[in-house]
Image (cartoon, rainbow, N blue to C red; front, side, top):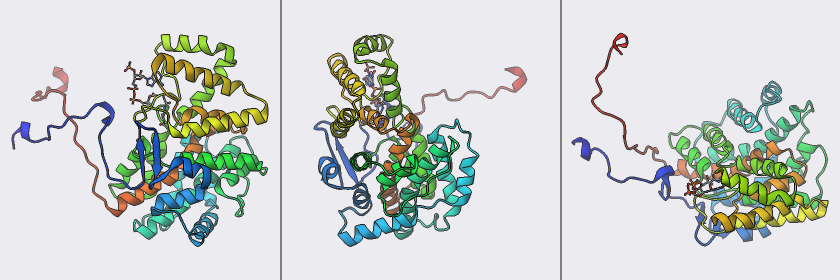
Length: 381
Ligand code: ACO
C-alpha cells in the first residue's frame, strides 16, 4: 500500500462534530427538535414520574424495573454505601483547597484498590461494580465537602434514596421533602446524554478492557472541564459577579464585546432549547420564590433573552442547575461533582454496553506535520 492508500480518505470536522462513533441503545439526543430519550422514554416523562433509582435501572437494563427488581436495586445500592476506611483516610489528607472534582477523581480511582471484584468485566461483575460506584460517588462528594471544612462525614441512611441521602450527608440534617424531590429530578435529568465528552471518554477507556474504575476516573476528568460539566459552577460565579438584574445588560454587552464565551449557552448537538433546561428553569424559579430570592432567576432570564437576540443561542443543561443548587445551600464547587453523582449512571450504562460488544476504539489522525526530516546531532542544531 502506498502512502495515499494507507488511510481512509474521510476527514472529520474539528472536535469530531457530526461523527457517529458508536452504536448505542441507551439514549438519543435529537438536537433539531430538542428531544432527549433514555432507552426510548422521553426525558419529560421520566423527570415527571420516575425516580433516579428507577432511571438507573432503565439505563443499565434497557427497560423500567418491576417493583421487585427496583427493590433489589435499592437494596444493593444501600448495601454499598459504606466507603472503605482507607479511602476516608486518604480524603482526610487531601488539601482542603483541592478542587472537589480532583478529589472525586482521586477517590474513585482509589476505590478500585478495595474492590476485589473490580476487574470482573462480565455482565454480572460489571453490574455489581456499577452499583457500587453509583452508591459510593455521592458518599465521596458529601464526605469531601465536609472533611475540607474540618467536619466529620455524616453516616449515610439506608432508608433514604440517593438524592435525600446526598443532601443529608452533606448538610447533616434531613432535607425538606420538596427540595429532595427536586434534587432527585435533577439527578434524572443529568443521568445520560449519549456520546458527550465524558461518556465517550469512559467508552474509549472501557474499550481497552480496562476496569470500570479506570473508565469512570477518566470520565470524571473529562466532565470537570469548563466546556463540559464545569460550566454549572461558572454560571453561578457569573451570576454572583453580575449581582443585580439591572446590571445584566451592561455585563453581557461587555462580555460579548471582549469575545467571552458565556457559560451555560450553546451546545454541540442542540440547535433548539435543551429539554432538560425547561425543567431546571422551573426548579430554579420555584426555589427562588420559595426562598424569596429571585435575583438569580431574573438575571438568568434577562441573559437568556439577550443571548437569543444577539447570538441565537439557547441555554444548555448547566445554565439553570447552578442557581437551583445554590438556593439549596450547596457550595458552588460541588455543582460539577453533583453532575458526576448523576452521570455515573450513564457512564456505567455505556461501559456495560461497551463490554458487552467490545471492539478497541482506535481511530486515525490525519498527519499534518512534515515528513523526511533529517536527524541533526544535538551539537549541530
Ligand atoms: N457564548 C458565546 N458564544 C458562543 C457560546 C457561548 N456560550 N457558545 C457558542 N458560541 C459561539 C462561538 O463563539 C462560535 O461562534 P463563531 O462561529 O462566530 O466563532 C459558535 O457559537 C459555535 O461555537 P463552538 O464553540 O464552535 O461550538 P462547539 O459545538 O464547539 O461548542 C460548547 C459547544 C462547548 C458547549 C460551547 O457552546 C461553549 O463553550 N459553551 C459555553 C460552555 C458551556 O456552557 N458548556 C456546557 C455544555 S453542556 C454540557 O457539557 C453538560
